[in-house]
Amino acid sequence: MKKKKIKIPVSKTFLAIAACLLFNSVTAQVDSAGQDKKESAVELSFYKKADLSKTISALVTTVGINDKWVPATGVNINFYTQTKSGTTILKTVVTNAGGIGILPFPDSLSKDAQGVYRIIARLENNSLYKDAEESIEFKEANLMLKFNPADSAHEVTAMVTETGSDGKEIPVAETEVSFFVQRLFGTMPANEDYVISTDKDGQAVFSYPGDITGGRTGKITIVAKILDNKLFGTVETKSDAPWGIVVPVETNPFPRALIMPKAPLQLIITLVLIFGGIWTTYFFIFYQLKKINEDDHVKKVSEINY
Picture 1 (cartoon, rainbow, N blue to C red):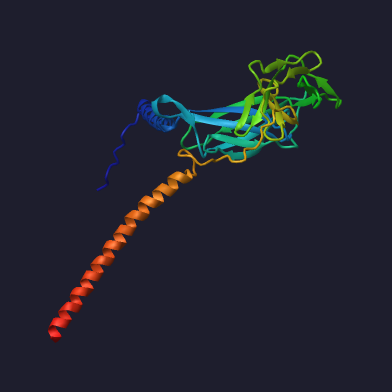
Picture 2 (picture 1 turned 135 degrees about the horizontal axis):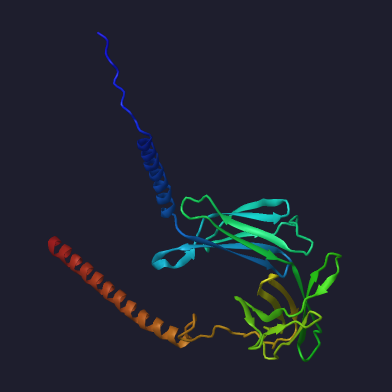
């Protein structure tokens, strides 16, 4: 007896509904995975130091406790350069404890006809953070100091220029230059009005006050900076000048006193006499007790022999 095959009719509507449900399920899973990642942001900056070394820094932050933005540490940041032919990766850098990834400026980095560099930093394909990107366009400025060490007015001229396509220096006007003095733990403003804008010749003239201390040699380190400029980033230069007040070296920087590491001699002698007397009394008592014990022992031996 032959068995008849029963065919269950499947409508096109049913297939369409099943496909939609499957698509929505996959999409929900993808969205759920994306929602688990934290928000992130990237901030780029360019820094040209006084020794002419140049760096590009990427600050990566993420949302932490109480919705506050905090540094993202140990994150891979990809640096790219943007040219007419497209985007080329330069290097991958890992952020430090402060969430900063530093890229040394490549000497081979190309610029356009106007001398503009274009850099892109991307946080991408990270399992903890959502993708983030930031781009920056900047030119390289030259900052130089000119002054006369013997000038009693302590006048300094900062010159801001940029290199043209023909290799010549072009003055940059209306650029703010800040003047500082180098100290042990950083720089401090030279006075209250320490920010001067350059004139049409690219020069900013500043007079250093005469009450700055300069140690035992009277030498101070003059520091000039272009800070967070939209076009040039941060540029720094420094030079030494003999304009500081000479501060003589103290012959005895740590005198004997109660608040100093070395106590006064009178106090030391007093404490030695007090503790010496106490310990002398202890030793005298121990000696007497030992002598009494020996005398008792001799007396008992003599009584037994008798």
